[in-house]
Length: 319
Image 1 (cartoon, rainbow, N blue to C red):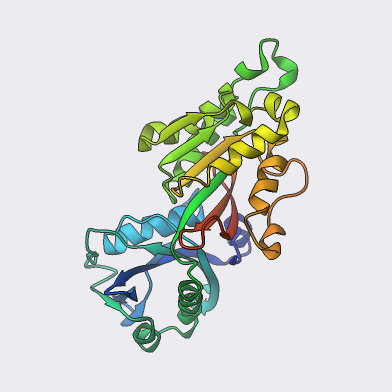
Image 2 (image 1 turned 90 degrees about the vertical axis):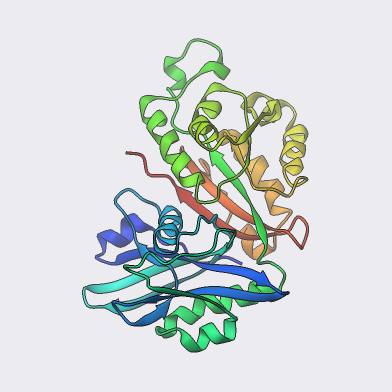
């Protein structure tokens, strides 16, 4: 499944108010429950959500707002729905993700949110004040029934902008990031934290390592360097590259993979074998496939082994 993705830059330019949020869920005594919030200002029941800060992507916003409103540190799961409805200042567009709730328990901030409740989906449907808020709930329930709600993230990142080949006379593997690329790497780190992968698999060439180092250092993620993900190895032995990508499925834990533009078609060909035809159409097929610092985020089902159930694409904002 895939949900429409908000292009926040173009949407803000059109005068729309862009927001993002989560449907936190848990399994309690074998039954699905979701977290709804009460907002005293509006006297309504809704989901944790809020407007984007300047320079923020919608995934980053969804995680931040959930922490601010209910005190839960979450990592995003499948995209659910993007809803739109009129507000006094125009049109509001809200993108939602599923987010499995872990301990500690949710705590309302006491300002925007004064009460929280864990409820069954049918109870949430009755309590929700905005009819459009039912749409992401229905998507979450459908994924649960298909055993596609419990997932882990597989994120493919193209390295950030490097110094031009034409101005580099030393070994290609030592070509570093440009100044713009170093700023992009920090933005990539912020973006990755929305899914918080515990492992990073990367080409050992300097521009890839420099791209993911801010995230690895900040989150203390486990880094593995794989020669098969370099441009050189992918061109000479593409089978080894495909095998390296296939192996990231083995541990069934959140992972980010950082590589080079010429390697991306091989990576996406492997991912395509793990998803339905409708999702394959969402994978980039035209060169350059991804912009420097851009990422494709796949959610892989934990119960349906190796099955990719959603595909998204985001570009980190550099300062």
